[in-house]
Amino acid sequence: MANCPKCNAKLKLTDWRPECPHCGVNMVYYGMEDRLLAEAEKAEAEHARFQKRIDRMKASLVGGPLQIARIVFAFLPIAGLFLPLAKLTLGEAPYLAAKTVNANILTIVDLLSNSDLGALLGTFSSGVFGRPMLFFALSIVLLALSVVLGLFGFFRLLCSAKKKSCIKNIVVSCVQLLLIVVGSVLFGRFSSGIAAVFPAYISASLGIGVIVFALLHLPSIIANILFTIKPMEVKYKELPDYAAEDAAMEAANEAAREEAEAKAEAAAEKAAEEVNA
Image (tube, rainbow, N blue to C red; front, side, top):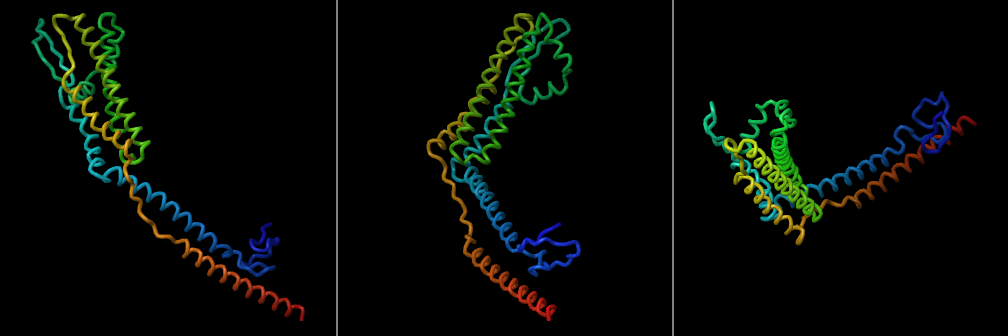
């Protein structure tokens, strides 16, 4: 059994009309103004929060010359990936001609896409050059992780107007540098290991691209350090204050509701008098 939302009287199954038989209020529309007002206030609060995010994003991207430069700095390390990251020299051997390969990100992707992954993993179990090949694979993985982390750090710039966000950006860049350093050390272990197995035929060394890739992270780190020392100013858009209008509208709705309820009560009393008469 349902109850009337106004007078809380119990309704019978035969009370199918929208008006309450006890107080006469329209139960379908009762309280609709309050619900609409609550929904409007909720929408205004959501709009205010979303507008603040937009304002912080604008400040982070185009809030000033240093913010714009920081976006450019985030792209700079990509240039180092297209420079020679490693140099592999193959000496002349029976049925093989001498060859020198300068590997960058394109040649590494092409090598991995065309190589037999199962055969590569099988070399790890080799007692002769399994350990050097493992170091080689780990160095490639760490390079890939540093690139992925760089993409993550770039998207972080979209919401990096606060001091804490800039500190997090510095941490991300430092982790990238750590991955590059560890990857370079592992590649050095691969180079020395493979040269010990094939001293007269194979030699490997790091290229200039690794150094450039690492150094080009420094401008972005410096920019974020500057923003932690002097946080960027965020200009929040002033939204119109609807509080007074909402209060007036609520008062008008309340007066109209009271008037309607008074008319309904008067009509109910009149109907009761007619029945008694």
